[in-house]
Image (cartoon, rainbow, N blue to C red; front, top):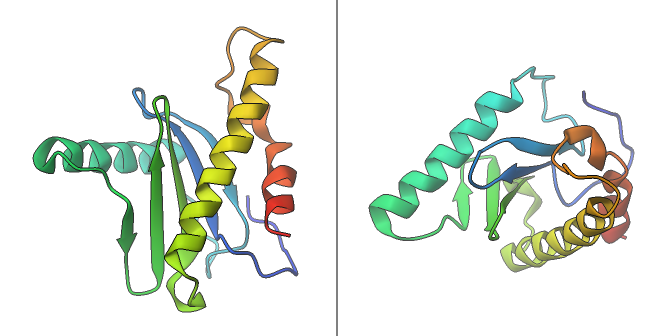
Length: 141
């Protein structure tokens, strides 16, 4: 699941979830998060969507960021999807830089998905987006 990378990436991890169903349709680890941790995409996506809905219903607000001691998670919700990225809190990266980067990721995603929707009826399989990793990594350059 994790790949070795020599480059220091802005992001540690990216998830793209279907907003209504909570299914993870894309997931990528840019670098190992310390120990190699095996986890279920269903468990993570269910937790993130449930937490997002909880905040939305209780506080009538949207989650923008969750900060832990060593990690930050940024959320960007669109009409159909939730884009979630994590980054190491120790990198001292300006939050607005991450927020702008998520917007660029979403724009790339929707360009790619609109092209692929013309070619197939159902565009919600994780494997459909594997070439998307190269696009995201190119954005960081």
